[in-house]
Image (tube, rainbow, N blue to C red):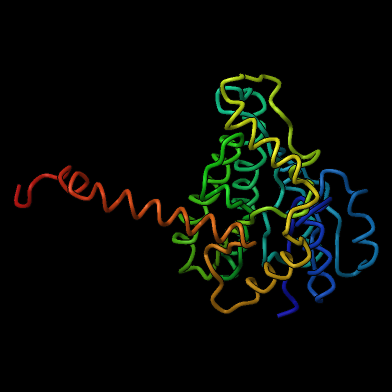
Length: 280
């Protein structure tokens, strides 16, 4: 079990950093990726035979290619890919700036998808592997002020579900992680604010943005415990497709289930009535 090789993106802070440290402490080998390798130098230097630092911006195809080649050349394969690199962005949907939104999609979704596509041939060949995509409870539940961030994470969730169905027969497992508030840098310097402010959204998007910003550093979620949960899921014989992390994530997801059930039941006749009558 401990001979597995991990590749983890976004290891400079937060989940990625804590996960990289725990994976190496647990006896696994790992490619530890960051846009600046100085940010992970201390981790790699503590495990010179077990770790390799990777300069990786997931929006740059050439750096994805080099990172995958570096890990396979050093360790022979990649067994676990953790797509953790990501950013946030605050603004009501009407306030949101297109260049910022597109940049976020390039990192949160397309970077994740391109990383996965680069690693899948390795996993297909060996008929085993595990892709772990870090999404958010915001990939299951929409919130004011982060509508486009929600969109990136909803995309990750749907992509992950489809991928799991495409690769299960190949021995490749997929888990999408949905955390609530954790004490990472996500709500700090890792998330820009829209420069556009529309007063009509003050009570909704404005209030939630201020609440999230004000909560930064005080969230109940512990990144070290989150890292342990992710390792536990990877080591499980039957890992979950979706793993919620944090009490708020569980509460939010259950509320969403209730809302879905109410709409489905209330509008059942209309839903079924949209089909041709049986026999036609």
